[in-house]
Image (cartoon, rainbow, N blue to C red; front, side, top):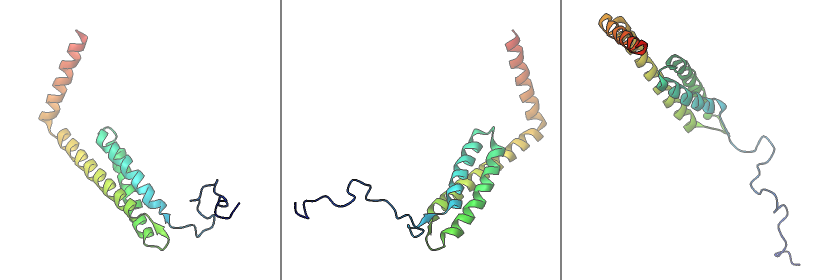
Length: 131
C-alpha cells in the first residue's frame, strides 16, 4: 500500500473537533446569549397580555444583560455582538409594549364610564349563563 492510498490518521473521527485547550477559538459571550433568551421570553410574555408584568421584568433583565454582552464582546476572543444586539432589540421592544399595555390598562381602569360598561357586560353574560 502506498502512502496516498492509505486512509489518513484519525479519518474515522470527527475532523472538525476543536482543541481542548483555552485557545480553542472565540467564545460567545454568555451575557449576550442570556440577553437574547430573556428578550424572546419577555416579548412572548408581554404579547400574551396576561403575563405582561413578568414580561416587563424579563425585558429589563434582558436589557441589562444585553449591555453587558456588548461590553464583553469588545474583548479579544469573545464574540456575540450580534446576539447581544438582538437581545437588546427584543428586550427593548418587550419593555415598550409592556409599558404601553400598563398605561392603557391604567387609563381604562381610571375611566369610570369604561369600567361601568365592562361591569354591565359581565353582568349580562353572567345572566345569560344562568338561564
